Length: 271
Length: 224
Image 1 (cartoon, helix red, strand yellow):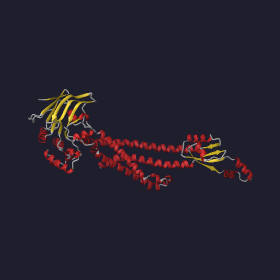
Image 2 (image 1 turned 90 degrees about the vertical axis):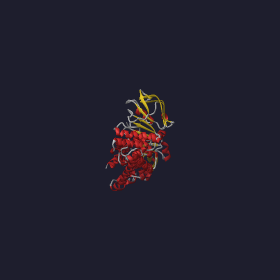
Image 3 (image 1 turned 30 degrees about the vertical axis):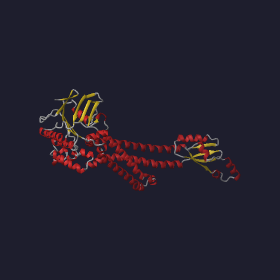
Image 4 (image 1 turned 180 degrees about the horizontal axis):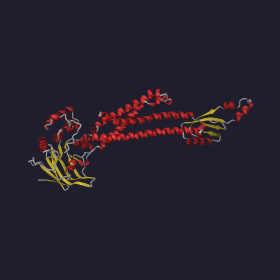
């Protein structure tokens, strides 16, 4: 019972940190996909006096990714129903050129304003509509959710770190006497910290395994049957095999730092 | 006979030299010698012993043990040197979660001896200190005198060049103390091991003319 308790006291905070790391990875991946869809769904409208090519737009601002021309005939056909052909041609001749311009990334409204002013500097561009207000509110909401989750993950990491430091003190108390006696008799660092390393590495593997199992369950069981669209659509992003490596690497790094801290703080003979 | 320990103008201090404990001491100890170091409480006996096993570094002068100057010794060399020492403490410093047998073979374990060699040596040493029947017990199950005999057995397990004992009988009754003195005297006489014992007073059982150093007013002096 004491054995299990001792291990759990390190495994649980370590798991909390690993969960934080995995949540961050998952969130980063899903928000990247969401950001991509926001970016793809957004375009600004440019009205030009003369036809322009994509290279013309890119020369004005490097963030412009594509410029799709809106067929003027379609616009005229919508507004000039029942009008004679000659009048239609006159309207068509007088009509400016319309472009849907999309960007290479999802940007802040200040960046949008800069792109707008860059475009409006061109003599053939009459008007640029960025649809800034709706864009801005979606972006702010998105940023807020991102910030809140990162804050939560950070808070979780700090609390877990304190728990790990607490456990390190317990380790120090439990192993100090043995390590000091071994040091007096000339044991090298690796030999006197061997027992502690074995315990901690075992905990690192268990914490990684449990965290991975939790996310595998979320991915294949919970997300698949949750009925939540974003979860079902982004199921692939919820956990990747490479995440096991990241989690294990992080757990081992934490363990090595924790064990060495205990070993170095236990040096010298206790009076 | 060659010197195992040689101190020249040795100064030992705490607080980065602010608190001098021993100042400008000169002495040497030959191989196979049995030496008592005495002195009043707080005179620096234990500090000198700590310096001899490299726990504190000399502030000035040199302290050569086994040919190595402890004033300028690397961590690796110090570890190597300590494997040739047997150290006995007043509070025994046994590992309580290990059996008596495992405590005894700690120096062999550190030196990487095979398990069967360790077992044979543990059996021999525990017989020597008359604790064979306690091999599988834990230190807390033994009396103070028995624990110190385990400490002596541990100190002897790798046939050390030098045994450093810090008040080895300080917590023991007369009978247990005499057993410990006998064990250390035998190690010195039979194995030619250098034995340095820090103590408040020389036990009366010693009629043999062993060498005696005294620490007084920060100096280390020979008592004739």
